[in-house]
Image (cartoon, rainbow, N blue to C red; front, side, top):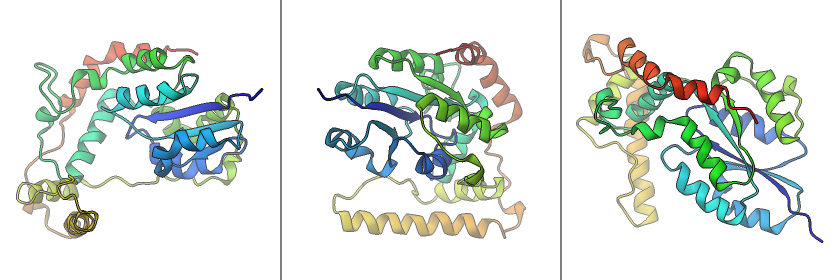
Length: 269
C-alpha cells in the first residue's frame, strides 16, 4: 500500500516576504522536497512521480488565489496551505508601489476605492479572513496562517515556527536574512509614473511569437530599469507630482479592515 505524501502549498500573498522565503529559506530546508516557484506548473507531475514523503510547493497569488487553489485541490485535496498576511494598509501601499514600478498609472484612489468598490483591487481582494475560509473550503486540512510583521521583527523565530509546523529543519544561523529585494525610492517611482504616462511599460503579452515577445520584454526592461537607475541622479523638482498614498489614505484602509485583521490574528490551527 502506497502512502500519500504530505503536501504543503505556500500560496502567498504577494508582498509578504514571498521572494525572501522562496530563495533564501525554502531552498535550505531539510526533510522536505521544495518545488521551486519556477517549477510550479509542473508541481503536480513532480509530486505524482514520487521520490519524497513530503513536498513544499510555493507560488504567490493575490487576485488569482481561488482559481489556483481550486485547480490544485482538484488533484491534492489533502494539502495544507500556508498563507502569509500583512496588515492591510502596509500591504496595499506595497502593492501600489509595485504597480507603479511595473508601469501602471493608477492614482491610489483608482487602485482601491473603499466607497464604491470600483478600484483595481476590490474589497474582497483585501478581505483576508474570507481567504482563510476559502482555503478551508478547498483543502481538507486547516491552513497555516502566518504574519509578515512577525517575519520582519524576528525572522529567526518566524522561520523556526514555520519549520515546526511543516516538520522541516534548517540552521537559521546559516541563512541570509537580508531582504531579497530593496524598496524603490519615491523619486524613482515618480519618474516611472511620469514615463508610464507617455510610454506603455506594462508587461503585457501582446505578441504570440516567443522571440518577438522576448524582444518586447527586453525593450520594456531597458526603459524601466534605465529610468529607475537614472531617476536617482535627477533633481527632485523634475518630479513634483505626489503619487503615493497619504497617511490619511492608509489610515482609512487600516480602519476599514480592522475587524478582518483581528479575525486573522486570532485564527488558531
